[in-house]
Image (cartoon, rainbow, N blue to C red; front, side):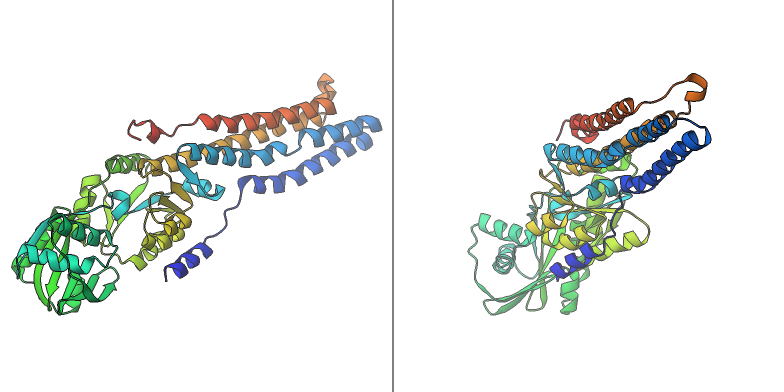
Length: 428
């Protein structure tokens, strides 16, 4: 299902047209028209010699050679992508740079992206059993899972020298929890939805304890033994040190910042408050993340999705720009257009800043390429000859054409020294 979602999202992306290609498609016919018109004007209408008319024609064609226009985009993109690699930001194609400059919204996955993805069990609250037994039955089931929350529970049990039992009939319910049988007893571990679907009753006192953990930004893992509520495991995932700073920098760039997570709304809101995120999408199942990205796009938003896990892959592919954390899974890295080598969210900010810088340089290159032509084509056409006797010989036109290309390449090479502002914060 994940593979199908990724393929569907990748296939739905519209191609991005290059600015220079559009410009050249109009520029060349215009220059040819001017050159022919100038030749006809001087030779047939004004009675100049054939040599003078041909000189004017050749000078226009040489000085207007669109080499600079052709170099404007690829040189900047090539240098910009190379500079990104030096900074630990791998950009897979030039389109990612172009789209990143137009972003309106950055959507972050929570676990492993905003947080370290290494949660720890902080609370063990047995209700129908003692705390040690609760941890024992939970860890005996969760040792079959590779979910970060499961690994945290198993680690806590082993740290307490609890010997685990084998389980039977292990089954996973995506975005809800797991089920297994331990010593002949059925065990359900997960969220409220899973327990409610299996008619497990949660009394008010238990609900109050769950809510308290969630308000502290912890994930409440609920355990039911033989369809009777048995206890709660509070699990906390530490935020990455630079997460609040990265969110702040994106807001300074006037970008909307949102968080998406499978956590319940109360836990998600508590974490979002700590890092300064106002928009939260909570309780989202893994397969629905790409649908949330699509929903934002349908509202006219240009969306970047930042994630690291297997279940983030469809959303990374669906987003206008997918930014994958380099420490994440291979499928996530494959689905993203930008890959952050370091596990550092400030690099996501730097990637957007680099994109804006490269696109700004492309526009500057195009400006100077057009400026040369706008100024020199009239001179080459002999506009100054009747008044000042000035002509623009083909050899000078060739020199001017070469200088325009050198100017464009030089402007692009200056990107090699560019350092994104977020890289100057001293914590990267």
